[in-house]
Length: 109
Image 1 (cartoon, rainbow, N blue to C red):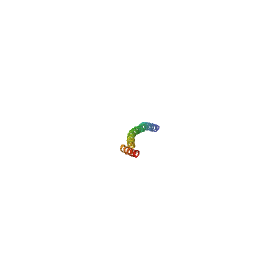
Image 2: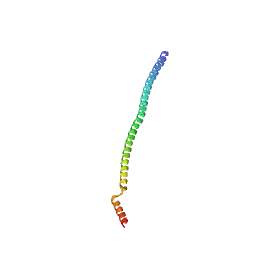
Image 3: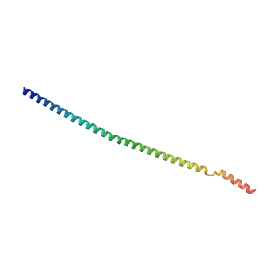
Image 4: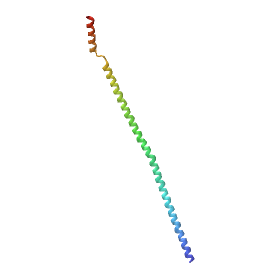
């Protein structure tokens, strides 16, 4: 009977050892998977701001190009306005001759 009890204890101990080994291996695999997922999340987090920065840089360049176009068109409009203003303020030659004729008549009288 003693040998029978000793066999059972030995068998149970071996079963426990195998179970602990299997659980340890599963735990190691889970930790590796967890580390891989964590690393992937960190890489995605680092990639997202880089992508966003690239998009914002592209938008910034487009805004600068639009501003340059607006500035150049504003300059063209302003120069046209100045030219129109200057041409409208030039004395009309036909008006000048009429005034001269009027002055001639008053002097002769």
